[in-house]
Amino acid sequence: MPDTDPPLAEAVQADEGPLRHPELYIAGDFVVLALGPRPILLRVSRAMLTTHSEIFRDMFGLPKSNDGTAGTVEGTTDENPIFLPDDPDAFIYVLKLYHHNMLKPPIQPPSFATALGVLRVSSKYQFQETLKWGRDFLRETWSLKSLIWQGYLNQPRPPPNSPACDAQTQNALELIRVSRETGIKEFISPAFYYLCVSGGAGCASSSSTILSHHDLFALLEGARTLTRSWGTWISQKKCAYVKSVNAQSKIRKAGCTQCQNRSDYGGSCYYCRRIISPELPEITPIPVVEETEWDLFVLSDSTIKSALASMGL
Image (cartoon, rainbow, N blue to C red):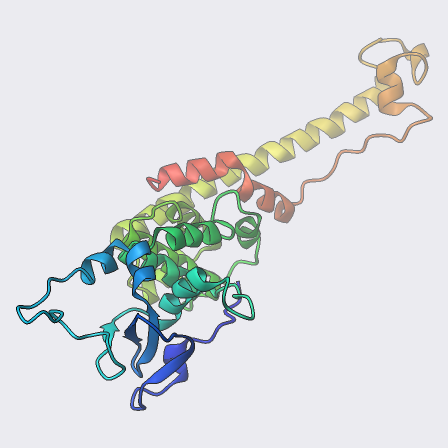
């Protein structure tokens, strides 16, 4: 999935003054939040935050001081906002999901990085609705039944021992990281299987700290299982092709194996007519093409299950 929305944190310089967000700095009884190196100020509904987030509900439920004022004045002005350490793009997208009926133009699909950020922010602050949204969004591209994910498996593989990870491998690694941070484990299996099929473990071991030694060992076991299963798969396909060719040859020489009557050849026997009737095209066995078979092999349920089992998933 292409990254279409540029990160706000990278679009501004950290040494410049605060910048009011054009859509999410709202007048009224709201709280001021600040995110990013050059603070992006968001003035958002305190009621919305406390309604949808148990974490913010506890944060804003601080006891009053003895003089009747709030225990903290953070969040009341632009000069004293509540600073949050989260990714601005992800947090803003979460808020936009709650305000999407008011925003014009309609909210655009996020980049993959922002979608992961939505999952992280929603899990951290317990925004249950956007957490569900984030999981549903990622299931469209990173689940075992996703047609998009299956398409990833059939993409050209990088050269062996390639030191640089391609974009899709980086996405798989980041998905593993966020899944573990949030405790959402449903995306770990698709990510690991992709790394196993694509050969991404090599670059991950040299250029990433996301995978542990245990993870790399699991990927090695998965690759071994794939190699063994592939050998069995292609051998069976080639044997079936040879048997089919031989069977066609025998029928041509000896007549129908069902009626055993050469005089019935191509005549009244159903099997003769179906296989080599003069009126019907002859059934020709299809040769085995390894490139095509590999695409079918890696998408097979039995292949996926055996590889994941060997990796302990």
